[in-house]
Length: 357
Image (cartoon, rainbow, N blue to C red; front, side, top):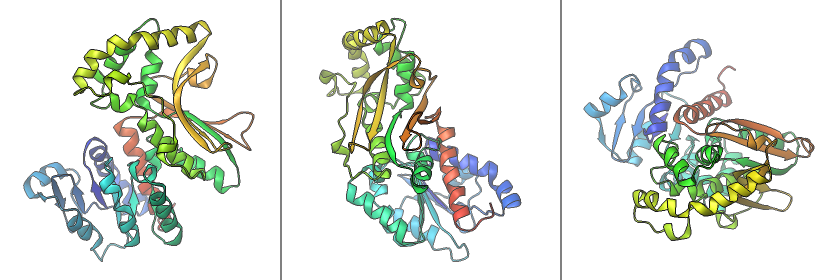
């Protein structure tokens, strides 16, 4: 394997691989070796496999200037190891643009990067066609819901002949946290500030509040369900007040946000009076072939009203699960669970390639 992007999620994955490698080898005869780790600036390459207990030190001692072509050639060029996978832990569309070429070369791809599957429709369709025509695998469970089994649940339903009618969910751990805590008269800006302090938001909270991350997840699930939609087809209700969209910095945005608390406070109070809660949701309506991302109100006995922390919850309404949707719920954000989802995909890849189950 070659790991791209040893940031928060990538380095957590490397730690999980380090802790589990010997168990996998002894108990399951799965030999996982990381032959390369690359960031935007530097890379570390090894012929036999990097010592994952010391990869940070080794990178400082033996690292070289990052060169993606050289990295891929090194990882794929070892003829003693039968299978090669590249694990892309970035959110970079430039990296995602390489998947097609890698799959054609026989390199498997595992990623939490949403850019390929939510980018131009023709690129997504060609990736899926490649997957079906070749023996090369492309796994992306962690693109939606971190470590939760959302893509695999959807696949299982479709492959066994069920028909998806609607997928509705709270797909953003950040916005889940914000609306779970936006109550008891608290100003919206205060809750956003708290989420930022706790590390739930992106460095610039507008990246979360714009709803684009949720839209990408909606488009991925819509396409998995067979809809041929572009990202631009999804109407998105942004929670960033119009006058603040052009703020020069996150700091300026946070300073100005309290001036706009009133509008959301009014919505929250109206919902409260009606015995309801506000939730920021993404919806894939397969029947009408459309997707939406918006703020909705739910009764207090609805499953979406009973979340805690940064939980995600996704409800699949299908021909089989028509009266009561199939619900997947759990932590939808965080390095540990996201890395765990990627690790799961790596092990799924190993089993597809003939590892004992």
